[in-house]
Length: 321
Ligand code: HEC
Ligand code: HEC
Ligand code: HEC
Ligand code: HEC
Ligand code: HEC
Ligand code: HEC
Ligand code: HEC
Ligand code: HEC
Ligand code: HEC
Ligand code: HEC
Image (cartoon, rainbow, N blue to C red):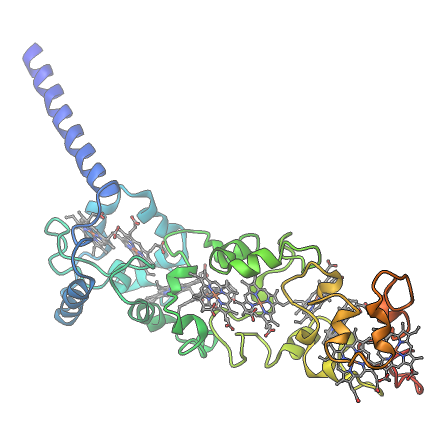
């Protein structure tokens, strides 16, 4: 009796140790192909893909080894792990829809699988082609050749799929994800005058299409001014008296991400105005910076030219009314 007990105990210890070892090797050790030449890994993946040896049991065969990872299992909290959604990977090739055919990977995990993110040996464009095989719709019509595509940013650079809550699609966290790469904008949105991004009342994708667009800076609208008018409709012309830099480009005077100057101005009046208005007329009065005259104090030039965005007054030519 005693012997049986201790034999069982020993058995348990062995199983426990084995489990501990596998868990350890799953979590702490790098993958066996980490120190191989990325081009070599890519070539193996290509030939695996052509051979197309998918596992007959789908996700079940993967989970035999990978179910211990809570990160892997979190796939089932999201749409990609839900077999009831039509077109979902789970309704078809399952894990292998994204990671490619199993091939000989199950022999100890020595043969690589397709991986995602910046550290993957698989080039960004190839990673993205996996996602685009299902997501090549009108939202991502302009993806190919846009700034992110050209800079080898992968879909996984912004998105997580093994999760029920993708941070970049959460309006409370999007700005954090975008600014992890865009440090200039991260600094700008903290400045004294800025769109309310730091309070999560606005997000980068209110103005930008992260998947690319036909405008210069991946704006959702065709031009900077159309972008601004979409929320500041009152600034849209035509005005009887236009101030030409305004109808030309709001960014002539404003930094949309934020500025140390009031109203997100790129520089302070009168200097802002003097960049374009030669200092030979009365506009140069403001250079006597220490004297408190109508050109320096209060609203500076706008003490008199208050209709800086244009005027509809019959005698508003000089933007004074
Ligand atoms: C016999 C066990 C086993 C099976 C079955 C298995 N894997 Fe693996 N897999 C491993 C091991 C071991 C590694 C390397 C260690 C690690 O990083 O987890 C690995 C690594 C991976 C990686 C890379 C992880 C990383 O951190 O870079 C992916 C992706 C992967 N497997 C996907 C799959 C998929 C999909 C299936 C099913 C089609 C599958 N595996 C089946 C054992 C297995
Ligand atoms: C086999 C097809 C397939 C593949 C491959 C695929 N997806 Fe999806 N994806 C779907 C389906 C189906 C949905 C749900 C669509 C819907 O609700 O309209 C979805 C939804 C999404 C969503 C929205 C998530 C949500 O909660 O609604 C994101 C983001 C996404 N996929 C990103 C990716 C990324 C990144 C990749 C590549 C790593 C990828 N997908 C690969 C089929 C796929
Ligand atoms: C620069 C960050 C970024 C990159 C890179 C990116 N996305 Fe997105 N994606 C977002 C944001 C932000 C949203 C939510 C706001 C929106 O829909 O515009 C989103 C939403 C989505 C959605 C759900 C809504 C929709 O548009 O259908 C899908 C699907 C998606 N992305 C797929 C992809 C795929 C596929 C790729 C790679 C080709 C990709 N994304 C690359 C930021 C990104
Ligand atoms: C929609 C595409 C898609 C599907 C389906 C999918 N994965 Fe992944 N997998 C990814 C992406 C993208 C990553 C990178 C991390 C992330 O986005 O969450 C990843 C990461 C991984 C990793 C590495 C995680 C780590 O430890 O860092 C493993 C292992 C893995 N997947 C296994 C699986 C298994 C097993 C299944 C099926 C149950 C599966 N994947 C289904 C796209 C997918
Ligand atoms: C993984 C890093 C990364 C993330 C995350 C990221 N970007 Fe980018 N983004 C880049 C790189 C790299 C470029 C190309 C180089 C450049 O122009 O700064 C770029 C370019 C851009 C451009 C075009 C810049 C130009 O020159 O006109 C815009 C706009 C942009 N990103 C917006 C976003 C938004 C919005 C998000 C979040 C939804 C985001 N990015 C998330 C890396 C990233
Ligand atoms: C209110 C609209 C708006 C919001 C919100 C916004 N942007 Fe922009 N962004 C613009 C406009 C307009 C431009 C073009 C500016 C120019 O060309 O002078 C731009 C340009 C850029 C550029 C190109 C570099 C540059 O300064 O010209 C990047 C990168 C960028 N934005 C990233 C971001 C990121 C990251 C966020 C979120 C933290 C964000 N933007 C939020 C409107 C916006
Ligand atoms: C998605 C909507 C949206 C878009 C697009 C937008 N704005 Fe705004 N803007 C706002 C909101 C909301 C506020 C008010 C913020 C507040 O009260 O703190 C604001 C405030 C401002 C202010 C006043 C800031 C201050 O400190 O008083 C200026 C200047 C401004 N926007 C310029 C622009 C310009 C220039 C563009 C185009 C590049 C633009 N906005 C595009 C929503 C938008
Ligand atoms: C010639 C420089 C200049 C240009 C170009 C310009 N603005 Fe302004 N804007 C100003 C100045 C100066 C202020 C602050 C004084 C004031 O409130 O009139 C201001 C303030 C604002 C404000 C906050 C106060 C208010 O009037 O609501 C908004 C919003 C704004 N501008 C939007 C725009 C938009 C949208 C465009 C493009 C259609 C634009 N601006 C182009 C100079 C300019
Ligand atoms: C990017 C260049 C630029 C900036 C900055 C600029 N302006 Fe102008 N402004 C112009 C141009 C161009 C005209 C049209 C001149 C013309 O028609 O002879 C003009 C016209 C005017 C006029 C009407 C004069 C006339 O003869 O029609 C006034 C007043 C004026 N600007 C004041 C200002 C003030 C005040 C500021 C600072 C808040 C300012 N401008 C900033 C370029 C600029
Ligand atoms: C005290 C009121 C006042 C202030 C402050 C003021 N202006 Fe004027 N501005 C006028 C009046 C009145 C006229 C028309 C009479 C004239 O031509 O001198 C005028 C005309 C102009 C004109 C068109 C004629 C020309 O001189 O080319 C421009 C451009 C102009 N102002 C720009 C500015 C700028 C830039 C500032 C700030 C540095 C400024 N103004 C500050 C009252 C003012």
